[in-house]
Image 1: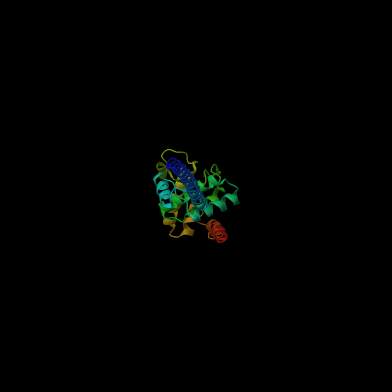
Image 2: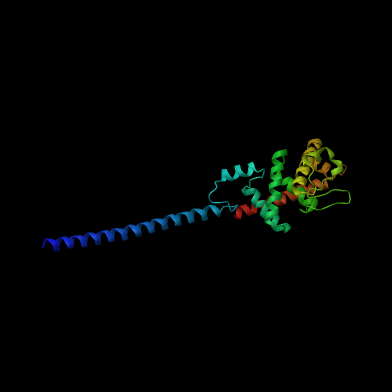
Amino acid sequence: MTAISLAADCRAARSDERFDLRVNSILCIVLAALVVAVFVIVSLTASSGPFGAHPLISPPARKATATARGVQAPTYASEALTSVIAREYRISRAVTRDLVGAAYREGERHALDPLLIVAVMAVESGFNPIARSDAGAVGLMQVIPRLHADKLPAAGGASVFDPHVNIRLGASVLKDCIRRGGTEIAGLQRYNGARGDATNAYARKVLGEKQRLQDAVRRMRRLA
């Protein structure tokens, strides 16, 4: 009887061990599934932001990385502006984002409203980086290299048709014109070489485009 009881006890113990193993296996699987589900939810939530940001990089880290690379970190306003320009001027979002980022960077460098720089590009070239006028104005902001030789060294020998170089030079010229003119309107007239135009037609056109883009961005932000 003792041997029979001992054998029964052993079988019961083995049965309990197998049960415990199955329970532990099920718990491990459930826990792993929960971890994966949480990771997926966090990833989808983070990547659904306005810039499609990487879910594992915080906004401050993205900004610090962009600054270290000399690239303007996107903001909600700049991304909305990118969407408006890309749609209205039929430019790819990637290219538009690059131009808008350069405008924001140079705006910060020269204490200019980046939207004013963008409006000048819109009026001057319609965002065509290879535009050239009969007067010798070239690129996005239609700068005339021979009139701004003092600012050309800042380009580091790069082509004035390069969008980043052109925006850098154009913003520098625009800032200088506004400083000399004393007002934004007078500066824009100087930029266009139309100081004698009492109607300020060019300035009104640029500022009108700036206001139009600003209104479009506001509408987009309200709908977001």
